[in-house]
Image (cartoon, rainbow, N blue to C red):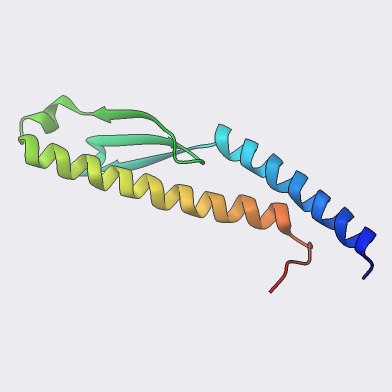
Length: 99
């Protein structure tokens, strides 16, 4: 493969990855815990948009709320990780990547 062709492929890959990152910024996932008592809304770039806590969960005390927020965040992060894998795989599909 000649250098010009390699540079063209690199440029194309860079553009596709940039588009994928823009797409991820506008996508959202929701992490849930405590039976839906805590919801973390996160972008595909791990930006937290909101945290919703059911007032009934507050009656369980600070420790329960902390655990619920942490569990909802982890659920949202796991969903965002999968979303990122899917979007980036689609962006780089068919592109030869170095080993």
